[in-house]
Amino acid sequence: MDEGSEENVQQFSISSDFFLQYIDCTQLEVAFTPLRKSSRSPIWPLMERKIKGRENTDLQVHIEDTLIHCHLLPLQCFSEYFEQEVRPGQAVVKLPAHQVPSAAFQIVYDWILDPNRQLEWEHFVSVLSAAEFLRIPSLVERCWQHLDNPKVVENVAFLVFLQARKFRSIQLQPMMLRRICRFFLSLVSTPEFCELSLQELSVLLASNIIGVFDETDVFYAACQWLLYDWSERQQTVDDVMKLVRFERMRAGDLARFCVYQDCAELQPILRHPATKQLVDKALATICSHQHHASTKNYAADGSSWLMTHRLPTERVRLVPDTTETLAFVTGDTSYDGFIEFLHVLCSKPNIWQTFRLSEDNVSLLEDMFGKSTATD
Image (cartoon, rainbow, N blue to C red; front, side, top):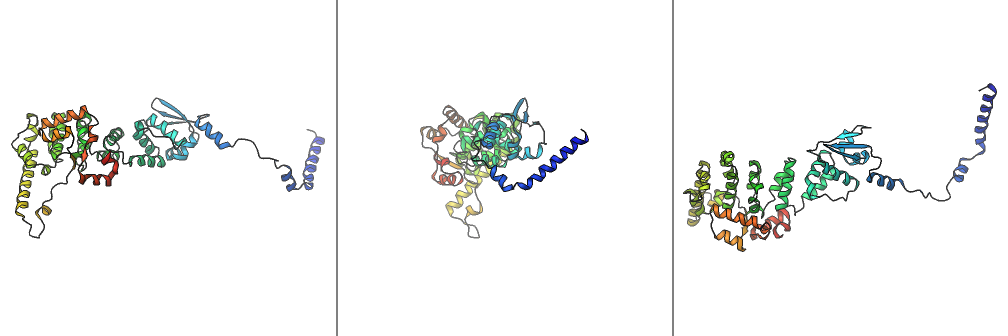
């Protein structure tokens, strides 16, 4: 460019700037204010439609062999994991399948896009596991709100327990085992009961709300578990028998166990030193209790014998008022009779729902779980 051209450009620039003194900014704002509002669509619904349609995704989530295309921004809005662990511009994220299964992540991502999305029961616990791993407090809270539902009891609680077992949820597993009441005997009839670990069995049999007709039901259930794999479990007889509240049994049943008057199958358990000691102690306690009660003997401080020799807490009692339950309670009270009743429960999977609780226990369970447990 020659000197003459540069001079012309400079003059034009000075002239243009000089002209602005004739223009008032208010005039410009008025002149360029639209006569009517824009008819353009708002941006947020358009962005929402594209995000939900997974258009122009910017993140790939790998879970084992599954590849999921997502938008990072929605995940960062709710997940502390994606907010803190994913680097800017990172295009691929790998997640552990044992904590975040691919099906669960799909549900989590859909829930982030739609908070009213239902959480299917098949994947409920896996969604909770994924939400905990991805640190999504609002989703974790929603999952626990579901678990606090008074209808998550009985067989439903055991289903949740089985799901939680896959993810080794040390908080959820015992919580669900302690919610089994009328379903207990039907549970004992299943292979899943016999496949419980010793720790899981201990949580279940330590529960005060498992529904039984008599404490002998708990004893026979414990025997059922031991005999399922006797070669491996015979060393646990001491621990398992301590879960049985022998002092809550009838003296006649204890006496029968003392002289080993039961089927040959139970002899290794009945003759085990731990079982013999517990049965003898319980029988002595009950006989002593009956003697003191009959003589109205009191302790030196004036309190009753029962106050100074407390019996174990009673379980939730079932009332035998159906054809099947009356036949069980008034029939053969041996282990063989118990096994026969388990076969009845297997052949009628829903019969446990007809079991009625004693009046003393109904109010207890209503306080704990709501009316649905006692009446459903």
